[in-house]
Length: 186
Figure 1: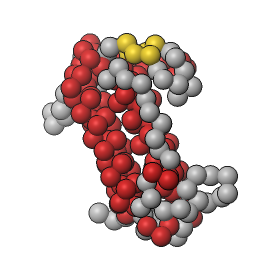
Figure 2: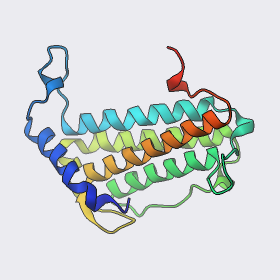
Figure 3: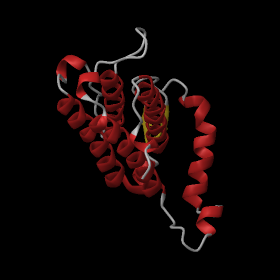
Figure 4: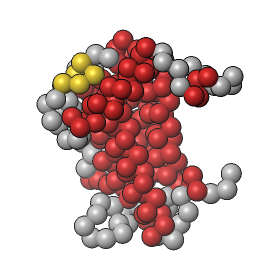
């Protein structure tokens, strides 16, 4: 999240587009839906959350402590880190101090990790829904850098962060000789 300043300009351009309703090519299509700022954020939050939950549920429990190289986190630690980051978003959005509780020692089984990932995604989604468009424009102080940004910028920082971990976990699947859920034929 230290890159938040450099991402503010593109994020603000997106926000301006969404907030002022400048039509994009997709919105002009007859079948396209028009989403508000909070609805678009919620869709993106839930989409990456769905993918990570699918991985958490799918990956074999006996491989949860697998890591491709000694320097990397285990599969479970990657999921816990991502879920802990989601909790950071939720805490900041609620005006609370974030709690760092993503230690593998607290989540001993696959079921524990899956439950935590699901809860972190659901809690973040609940906050986005509750905040609505105006609440997502509320200025917040980020926990890590201390920067002041619109809440929606922090949400997208965490959506991107989750996407980065999703990409890493795809590699874990491939190195373990498995096919990620999203890469399987539908």
